Image (cartoon, rainbow, N blue to C red; front, side, top):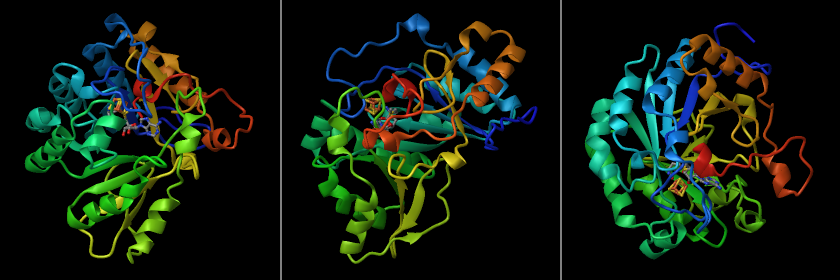
Length: 335
Ligand code: SAM
Ligand code: SF4
């Protein structure tokens, strides 16, 4: 490992930190949380804003340049814009993005933009109101559509939609999302359904490889052209349909992992540094708050235990894995 930089034993440089601000959410998406019985961390377990700032100061001193605020739903946390303003003033931090379900975004977009959020990913798996209510267990689609318009109005750029593709649930809307990328300057990211925090086999039945998206585009007579990467830190493969104002991205962690280029670390809402989305290993920052050198060493230790690959595909094949997958749910990690 190179001193002063976050380079792991596989030569991967880490300049991106995803921060989960809370494990709570105002929705209950079927692929992310159970309908009932979800246990949330008590408030005193959740990192305070000052603690997050301290961790980010250390991360920035080690070369982290870009942040993403996520959750749970980051906008259920009060005064997120105040945190953003402090984070964006940390020397070295160049870019702050937000992943949100959009429910509170219309009312907060202006303040977040002023504070320093440059771009947003809004999760939207369907454009049918009843289906949206079903997938999110009660969400109001109109609020997300308002969030999308507010994002254009305040000038977030790029604006990305996260669409988790599920067999028999929303795969009949691939064409509609492809058309949306034709008509508007939106980056539509199709995401494979991941086996995160799932102890049953339900996800396997709904899992759909993203080759389905390319097949649909071709069926519409639109051959996707590979494009330069749309601004961001993500592992998506990006395409543009002929004549489109927007673009599409495919995120296929299961069918074709992209671990070789992984540039990210994660900080959970309860203060654990997670080197890999899928593996159980994580390190608690809490005991080291107030000691920047100890926090720096913790970042190095996180890199030292980062696996080469996550092996999600083996879960699909029901094969043995070399490591224990995470017990946390996606809402507890932040995606
Ligand atoms: N609440 C915010 C939202 O929904 O955008 C941020 C947190 S959410 C956990 C982050 C992303 O993870 C969302 O785009 C969501 O669709 C995605 N996600 C959650 N569970 C997933 C799963 N099992 N497979 C694939 N993506 C998932
Ligand atoms: Fe909440 Fe986001 Fe998980 Fe949906 S995907 S339940 S909006 S955290």
